Image 1 (cartoon, one colour):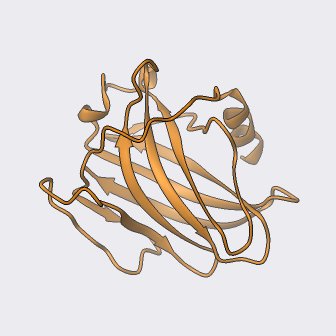
Image 2 (tube, helix red, strand yellow):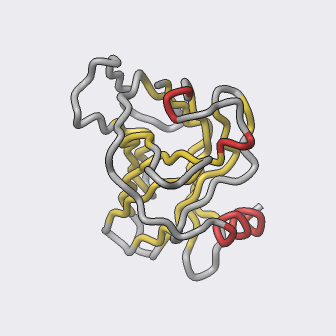
Length: 166
């Protein structure tokens, strides 16, 4: 499982990400989310929603966006706080968009986070695998948020079934 995730990450192209093109979020659910939050489609520009909070990480969904000049993909921006005493690697697994499975979700650069620090990245979703033509066609995203020990690449935490309604 980690091997396929590594292959997916390595296969991802390094891209310069634009932070424009925010879409507001309707709701979120997940197995270990302590405070379900909701925001209507007229919501504020801040828009971050907590999607995970356990003894290993806390994570917020920030936005979904496309980057001008980069065709065929959209990005899901997450901000993850490392609560451990180890450097961690964070990735997504078992992802789907509008109930269609996505075989590979990658990042341009691996998301390693030092102890006590946070890290932010745009996870890359390929539209060619989906029945969507743009990020505005996305109504729901689900995934597991996986935390691995950077030194061993062994999985140390998995927040299962995070679901974000847009």
